[in-house]
Length: 76
Image (tube, rainbow, N blue to C red; front, side, top):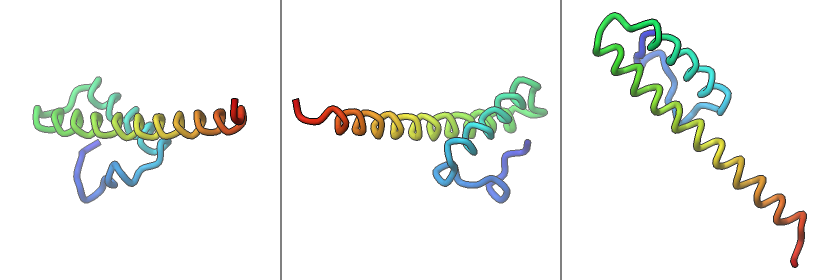
């Protein structure tokens, strides 16, 4: 997977599932070994951005669940 800005969508525009699936592909390619150091670094940077995007989605989901639980419990 060559990381090029022309083909890859912005990380901020990805859904959780899209970011997770691309992260899995990036990790697999890094494990196989990229042909050059520059490509390895580009993959690593993309992977870091994808992991951060996944974490944003998960934290947002946790906040929504916490708010729903608080609303369901009602005032104490």
